[in-house]
Image 1 (cartoon, rainbow, N blue to C red):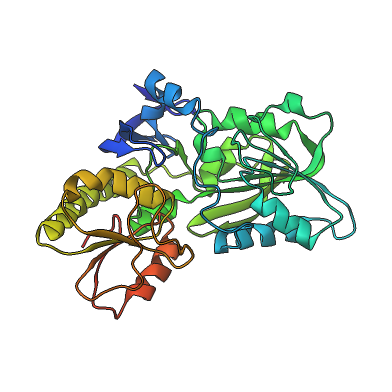
Image 2 (image 1 turned 45 degrees about the horizontal axis):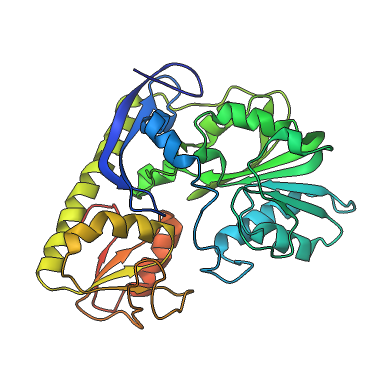
Length: 364
């Protein structure tokens, strides 16, 4: 029986992908997502196995492709996060800022550009080369820090933990009493509404604002942006009981619809490839790796290319797919993102080319 890691109540399976891959390795594991019938939290129940935990021991130390994009990466998501952090920083102080899971330090670098008086520090187990952002290359632990911070940033970090409440509680110990916590997670409400492939092996928890509040005991949100990414600023306070989703049947139905669409579209891509269509993967980062690893057995003998607006190497560095300079009429374009707003922009970019578009995993 699955137990919800947020509220301790019973959860039931609502989505299964028996052949899911990790983005950074040719390793396949069964992926199962469960939903809590009490609070509505969705989580990867398959992540609680010994096998999964063994795989993830070194996963973040060897995370790939630090240099696939120019540093700092000034994409929409980093700009949105930066704007929200800046709007809550005191205007006249040299704030101390810690980012947990800082990777290369892109966001901290951009923050320092705007507020050079701030003291920034990253902590991340990945062994990325130094980019001028001071970084502790270890997993986060409160014991690493002798002082507290005005701001702690968790940008796409909380969804990777089997015990999000426990991890958030640890992080809060390095935050000053009057400091603020910035969080950025994939928004499960958008995933289900847009039927976006958001259930992946490297994500464990799937949050909306209600379940995010439940994970952050002793904190309350003071600002939130509910888009494909859920961005929120929290401060210590009297936490109000969040309005939680409890319609289990509706939640389960949305998840099953997504599971069905994935199976149907995988079969559709295979049929089109067997008919001789050129398959072009639009996007060259994490979701492309996941999709291509899952689909490549179905694409034996198919002509495959990649296309990306912001990555111009002649060959994609992991699988060696050649770069497609433009989208040709008659090709099959697989959009590679799990952010519905990014997918909208990609779909608009391809419209009018005469290509057939597959948007994982929205049904045809």
